[in-house]
Length: 334
Image (cartoon, rainbow, N blue to C red):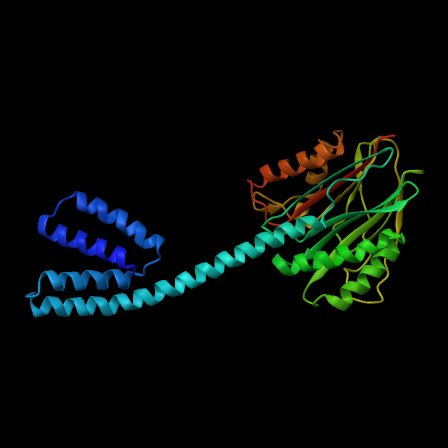
């Protein structure tokens, strides 16, 4: 124990046992806060108390002195537990700091803004259920009025998922120099994942290329949650097809492509399974309910729409996000 604090306690104890002044109790409370700030274990406080009492009252009955010895032995156990707890708390603080740094780094893996494409309105929102997200989205410039759009869900949590995300991101960075078809993109990423990711982890993805010259969306999927195609003229939704295996299961996996033509105000809605696995009144949200919800906001600008949809889901689930949620809307406006 700090010598200064020890002397303060001894002085306070000596004064209190002789006068029993109530203001000494307040002083004791303040002193205890200093002890906690200095992380002084309880056995050291009790030891200082016993020494002071024996000094003040050298003629204490042997039975009382013996009780002090018993108390000290008991408090030694508390002291050991206290020190172990301090070590765990220090380690916890270190981990939290490391995670905070990792969260910041993870944010740099996501696009800083949505791309601009003539005749197209794009909005995206991605919200983590915990500190670190397993969802990933990206945009790739395919040139000549075309843009690649990816949404991926890493089935896993925490830092391992973040590491997988970084691997996917840097693998996709190569695509900007040699734009590929959606099927070729997924085949290329599948080989990367199969070589580098533990078999216990799975990665789903949808990758599509929107061509603003003819307003066609060509896409392929790797076990990802089926997206939606909103047809404005009919005011209804069609489910996008999903026909490919999740990434990393088989090196020889094929990823068939499909193409959708968009008329003015039609939209593509992509999302992660954190959206469809929302629990409303204890049950997973029905897909038809989700379509009705989206339809209520699809007329809005794309960014406002995704934010409103997420907020409504948040309210419907009693403000509890059980899994990461990513929602992306791509809407033809001309």
